[in-house]
Structures are given as structure tokens and as C-alpha cells.
Amino acid sequence: MKMNKITTLLFASLTMGMMSSCVNDDDTTLPEYTPLIFGEDFSGAADNTLFEKEGWLNFAEAGTPRWTNQVYSGNGYAEFTSYQSGQTSNIAWLITPGINLDAQEGEKLVFQTAQAFVDNAANTIEVLISTDFDGTNVTAATWQTLNATFPTTSATYYQFIKSGVIDLSRFTGTAHIAFKVKGNGTTLDGTYQIDNIRVYN
Image (cartoon, rainbow, N blue to C red; front, side):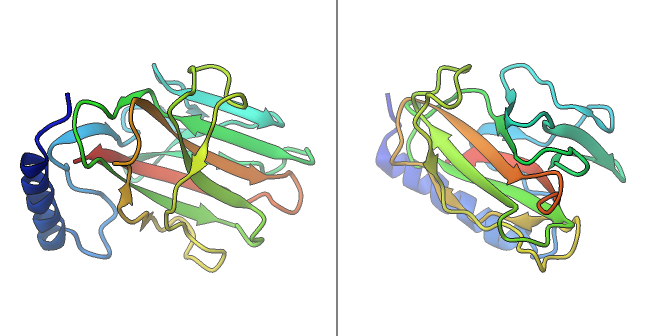
């Protein structure tokens, strides 16, 4: 059952208070939100290897490149690029394990993204959510785009920025969050990085 709304509002107020007092604009890591429902900081994997983690799906819808693990100065993150793919279309998804949205209320999503060598607005990244994804068939699921802040073509390379707080409270059931990049091997061959994914309430 969902938590009592008054209790949830108190948790949310405390969480927002911690955010406003602890998070600086130039931070590159996110605090440990409490209560944390889901979190991923991409630590522990070897540099420049294919991203493979239990429960996740790393899927190439078009072309062959998929998301990889990268490590820089001890910080792990996931990265996608279609650089030198030689393919006219590259579409890649990185999809979280299922997240139970019925055990509590007031869920929020935050994460960080960065870009490098993205010089065309058609080379895109977006974040989506599905509550009917079966864990396998990506294109058969219903995906809704979430409103988030992403780095623009003029952003400093490899500088992570915050997504903003994304309200997930209107969704119920088991949800999957997806990060989807579109590019190609010639004119849209920039690189995107994601890190510090948190779902909390």
C-alpha cells in the first residue's frame, strides 16, 4: 500500500531541505537521498567495457554501438557514442531494472548528464519511462518522455549537469527508466555520459 500522504510530505520536506543546504551548483556527485528507492552511480566496472549489469538492458535499436562503462579520475559513469560507427543511424537505449512505484508516494527522479563533441542538435539524448515494458521488447512498450535538463551543444565537454527534479508520482506499478540516444557515424557522432541516477521520495 502507498504510504500516508502526510508522512510522505514530511519526508519530501526534509529531503528538499537537505538538497538546498548540501548541494552546490558545481557538485559532480549527488547526495544520498533518503528514503532512496533506486540508485545507480556506475561504480565498480572496468573502464571502456560494455555496460552489463543484472536487471538492466543495454539495447541497440539501430546500428551496433551500445552503452559502455567509463572511468575517469576514479569516477565511473555510462557513456554512449556512435563515433566511427560507419552507420547511417545509431539509436541506443539504457534501461533500468523495474522500480516499484506502488510501495510509496511522491517519487522523484534525478540524474546527471554530460556531453562531448555534440555539435548538432539532432544528436540527442532523452529520458523516458514505461510501466508496461516486459523487460525484453523495447519497441513494443509504451514510453513517455520525461522533462529533464540536458547539456546543450555549447556545454563544456564532460561537465556533468543536473537533470532537475522530475516528478514520477503520477505513475503507478513497476516502472522502467530509459536513456535513449540518437546519432550516426558521420555528422551526429558526439558522446553522452550519464551518472548518479536516483529515485527517491
